[in-house]
Each structure stands twice: as C-alpha cells, then as structure tokens.
Length: 638
Image (cartoon, rainbow, N blue to C red; front, side):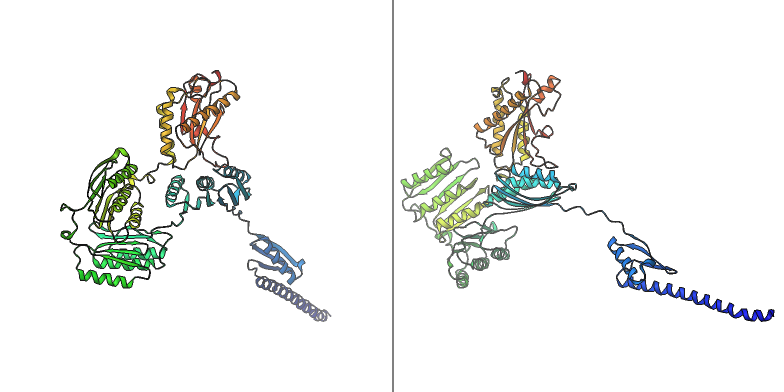
C-alpha cells in the first residue's frame, strides 16, 4: 500500500515542479520583454541617456537627463509602453549651469543737439548716470532714451568705454558711437581734412590705455578747382607735387603708374569733386608713362589742359614721337601742350645782355628780400604793397629795378610766385621768361598741392614751373598740438611757481597775482585747438558760515574765469563752480590746513564715473590737476 501511495504522489510532485518552472520562465520572459520594449521605446524617442532594469513586474528607469523636460518625457514614454504603475523613477537631472551674463552694449547717435541711444546697460543707476552725462554735453538739448537695464554687475572695462564715448560725443556734433565692454567704435564726418586730422589726433590722445578704439572720421570730398596733378622726374628724385583723383580706382591706377615710373615711398592722391572727365585716371596713367619714356621732366594737369615738359637735352625726334603718341592716346576733352626746353645758350636775355629775372627770398625769421626786374614804377609799387600785406611791412627789403622790355605776362608770374612764397615758412622764388621756380620749407603737408593749383590757375599750362617744397612736420602746428593733460600740467606748473591770491573777504584777484593769471592765459591760448573741458573750482576753509563760504568760492571761481576772458581766452568750454568748504584736502583744525583748503582748482571734466556719476565734484580732491593756494588767514573771518 505504501508503494501504491508513492506511485500516486509522484505525478503531483512532478506537476508542481513543472508549474514552478513554467512560472519562473513566464516571469523571466515578462521581465525581459518589458525591459526590451521600454528600452527600445526610449531609444526611439531619443532618450539614450535612460537605462532600464527589471525586478519582476517592476521596471526601474535610471540615468541623468540633460534637463527636467527630457526627464519627464522619458518617464512618459516608459509609462505608455507598460503600465505606469510598474515604472519606478530613479532618474536625475544635470545641474543647471550659471546663466550667461547679459551682453551690454549701447548705440548712440548724435545729430547736433539731438541724441538718441538704444541698448542694454548694467543697472538703473548706470543708466541714469549715462543720461545725465549726455544732457551735460556741449550743445546737447534733447536726449531720446531707449535704454534697457539689467540687474547685473558691470563687466570689466564698461565704465572706461562709456567714459571715452562721452568724451568723443562732446567733441563731435554729429556722430555714431558704439559702446561695448573694452571697445568703442566712433564714426563721424568732419567739416574738412584739417578737422579730420585734428579730431583723429584729439581722440587718439584721449583714448584710455587698454581700450580698443576704432575711429572712422571721414572728411567730405573737397571741390578741387582747378583739378590738378603734377608729377616730376628730375635730379631731386621722382615725386608728386600734387595729385587729384575722382575715385579710389583712379587713385590706385595713378599711383601704380607713378611707381612704374620710379616713384618710391609713400604716395597719396586727394579724391575730390570737379574732375573734367570720367577718364581722368586713364589720361593720367598714359601721361605718366609718356614722361617715364622721356626719362625725366615734369607733367602737369590743370583740368583738361596737360603740360608735358621734357628734360633739357632730349633729342627732338624722340620728343616728337612721345608727344605725338600721347596726344593720339589721350581721351577726348584733354589737350596736350608739349614743351622741349631750349638749350641755355638760346634763352632770352634782357636789353643789357643779362637774363630777365625776379628773385624773392624769405628767411626762417620772416625777412623778405625782393630783387631783380619789374615792368615799371607802378607795378613795383604794387608788388611792394602786395608783399607788405602778405609778409608784414617791417619785413620787406626791396632792391628791384625797372625794365620796360620784360616779356608779356611778367606781372602775373611775379604776383602768383609771391602768393605761393607766402605759404612757405622759408624759401625762394625765381621768375624767368617761360619759367617760375619755387623752393622752400612748409608747415603743412598740403602746401605743394595748393601751390600747384595756384600756379595752374594763374599761369596756365603753357608756362613752365618747378616746385620743390619740403614739409617739416616738427614745424606743423596741428601735428604738434599739446594734449589736454599737457595743457593742464602747464597750468599746474604756473600755479606752483606763483600762487593766485585774493583781497581778504573779496573775489578781487590780488594785483601781485595777476602775473600768474597772464601765464595761465597764454597757456590756454596755446591750447585753444585742444579738445577739452575745464572746470575752475573755488574752495574755502571751514571758518565762517557755510553759505557765505559757498558764495565766496563761487565768486572767486567766476573772477578767475572773467580774468581769463579779459585776456582773450576762449572760455566756451570752461565753467566756474564754487564748492565752499565741502571738499577739504587738509585738516581745517590747523592754520596750514586751512591755508591749503583755500584754493582754486583747474581740472578736466570727466563726464562719467563708474556707476554713472559725473566727475566734477565727488573726486575733486584726488584730481586737483592745478591748485591755487592763497595766503589768507581764513575765509570765514575775512
């Protein structure tokens, strides 16, 4: 019976084991399939970062999502693939990086009194400081504010860039200024090439160290009349005395032709209006090539008239071939006057056998000597009067003689030559039949071009003339303008040598102190072309009532300003401001300290401080560029 029981029990055991195996297989199959399905769905949806593991019916999703949105999307995909209740979330999110600071920048447009600006600045305080500075600019009336502000600290270099932008806008009545940290771009149009040079120099000097400054100061194209070009090949080398072009392409072609002819070093052509033909550049290139073929001489364009002067000794047949080829190749409108100089032995002589000649010389000291021959007494008087008007009555020494047989056109050549000589610091003029020569030293790089235009207009293309003018930069007043800092340093030196004093309790400058006022006035006159704004600040000690000290300091600052105006100083960029006892630089508890606090300060006005404040008051003691200390015993007691 026992055996029968065992035989009957075995099937049940086997059935149980089979059921358990089937269950285990089913669970594993469900786990694996669910995990595969969810993993495939996540990869298909682009969530490669997510990992899936199974524990029975439970699916655990792990991994680091790039952001919260992608994490939520991945869990949603898993919940849609299997029952969402079976999904266990073990994911996290990549920590958020710090937000990128805002990019601050300003675009400022100025057109006369109107100023508009747009951009983003660091904070409301900085914005208000910029607006205050703009309203204080020279000539500014209306400011259109389209600025936004962000509550974030100012980046390095921002305040320096804004400060320079205000300086540039104060110099330029019309301009576009782009400001960003560590960089300022200024674009403007000047009134003339001279203004362009002056503004470029002033802005370059004012640019702070470490600030990237881009200056695009354009000058309007001048109207050139006559439209001239003069190219010379001779013993002094190859050079342009004058060069005009109607476009950049024509300029480049002309300079390239000149270099092919032997020109070395720097060369430039003025691009202007008034060209007689759109083929000016083509005509100039062909004429320069013809001069090079002759091996020397001079080439002069005066509008559409061309003068080609060959060097002495050029064979006649060669000269004729070159002149004919050039005349045939020139564009319409242009006319050629070719000259082959006569040998010296065949030149005209005067009635007495000597060469007809007029010579004028000007020394570096300004003394002018006139000698040679003039047509008659009336013309000699005219020349003498003209020379006195141009050079000064006390500078003329006249030893000219009368010769009624001089050639036609002599008076015009003499007067044109004297007018050209007046543009030189020193030099000599020689007038002979068929030839005018001018040599000397100039203080402007444009002098040769101006003289060429003068001779072309007055003498015409049929007269030979030679111009040998050397530009001396060290004598150029524009090239050697002092900087604003140098001007203030000179004022400081004057005040260190002798203090300005006032009558006790009054705003009247002491008689003994007028000498230093005279010296300061001379310094400011020499700095008249320097772009700067000055403040004359009056200060007192703490003796007496505060309101009285404030009024006295204001009156004394105005007295200094009035004294400078009386001495011919232009004061349009100068202001007088009294501070009373508010800004001491020494201890008012001692006599020496009170004496130091009674002072006049000359300082440049810095338009924007870090944070937007104007720097005309808060930091005055630290920026007292030039200080006057009186010798009084106490303002409050006077």
